[in-house]
Length: 371
Image 1 (tube, rainbow, N blue to C red):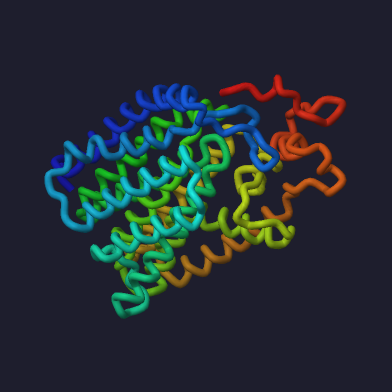
Image 2 (cartoon, rainbow, N blue to C red):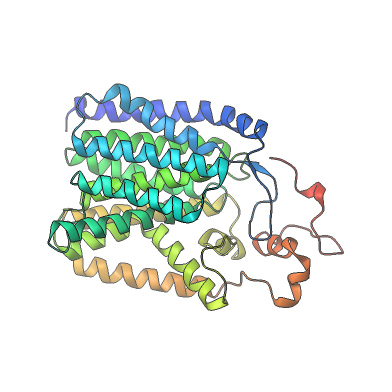
C-alpha cells in the first residue's frame, strides 16, 4: 500500500472533519431561524427543543473532498455516491415537510434498486435477481435502522464514525480507494458533527443525516464484503458490520411487541436509553456504542477476509446478539399505567433519573429551553 493510495484517504478525512465542524453551527442557526426544531415529548429523551439540520453538514462534508480527490469514478462508485445524495435529499425533505412513511419507503427502495442494478449486490443465494432483491431489502432495513439509532445525543454520529473508519481502512487495504475516500469523508464528517452533537447536544442530524449514514454504510458494506465468499461468510460479515444497529432495531421491535405498543412509533426504549437506566453517563453512552461498533465491524471484516473461522464467528455473533437483547429487555423503560397521568415527565425521568420533576411530578417549561 503506497503513500499515493493513503494520501487521498487521509486528506479526505481531514477535509471532511474541518468542513463538518465549520458547517454544523451555521446549519444550527438556519434550523432555528426556520423553526426546524425537535421539541421534547413523552416518547423522546431530550429535554430541550433542539434544531435538527446537522445531517446536511455530514452529507456535504462527505462529498466535498471526494469531488476533488477522486479522479476515477466507476459505475458502482457513482451509484453509491448518487444514491447517498438522493437519500440525503429525501431525508432533508422529510425533515422539512414530514413525508408519509410509504412515500419515504418507496424512494428508499428505488435508490437501493439502483445500487443493486449497478452490480453492488449481496451474493448469497445464486440467481442475480434474487440476490438483487435480498440486497434491496437489506439496504432499506439498514437505512432505517440507522435512522432509529439517532435517538440519543452522540449515538448515531459515534457509531457512524467508528464504523466508517474501520470500513475505510478495509477498503484501502483491499484496493478500493474510491470507496475508502467516501468512507473516510463519512467517518470524519460524523466526527466533525459530533463537536455540536456530543452530550448535551446543541443540534441533531435529523433524517437527512441518519438516513444518509445508514445508506452509505450499508451500501459500502455490500460493495466491500457482499461478494467476499459463501453465504455464511457474507452473512457473518454484514451482520457484524451493522451489529449495533441490528441489535438495537431487534430490541426495539421485540420490546414494543411484548408491551403491546406500535413498533413503528418513537420511544425511549433503545439501547442508549437502557444504558442510561443502567447508570451510564450521557457521554459514556455514545462512547460505549462507538467502541462496540468498532469492535464488531473489525471482527466482521476479519471474517470477510478469511482471517477468522466463519462458523465460530457467526454462532458467537448470534449468541452475543441474543444475549444482549435478553439482558437489555430486563431494563425497565416503560412507565406503569398509573404513572401515565404524568404525561411526558414520567418518561423523561425514566430516561434521565437525575431530572427533578418537582413535587407535582411535571416538568416545568423552564426546564425545556431551546438548545
